[in-house]
Image (cartoon, rainbow, N blue to C red; front, side, top):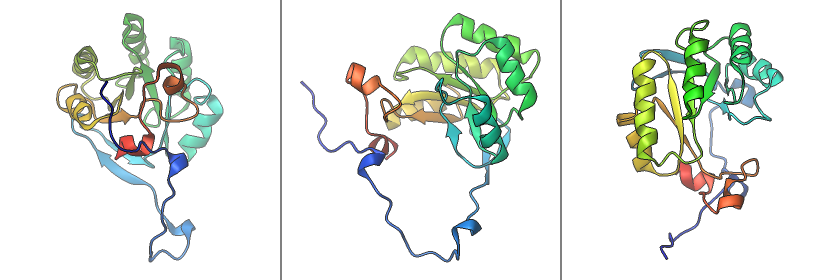
Length: 200
């Protein structure tokens, strides 16, 4: 049996140590910034926080709150085409992204939505992104949507992050497998990595 030595840490296990700061008050902190990407020629302005594309989280109310603060909601991949169009017609598409899996109906739904909202930003989401077929699939999505900002995952090691960016054509990589209480992957399958250790 191969065991990885060391500790796998979650956010439950770690506190952030305060440091000296020149900021007088937390209300003076500016989280908004501009991002440029490796593949997409778009720039994105906002607060770099993305609401995970989990069914109980990606609600209309969540979009209202996140969009107001210039943060992203990754809509869950089980929404129907009509529901996606409704979200994207009401909220700025730069803050509301479409999630798809690797099923044919997912990509077909994406093409249909693009008739109404051209070049949406995309999250390609599967439970375990450490697969060569996943990298190849991401590349096909990139080739079909060259202007979109594409996020893909989930992975838990640096080599897979590099593979998705360099060969899969993605701009953002989703890291973490079984990272917390909302995700049951670790409890059901025994697969996962503490999220702080994974990010590190």
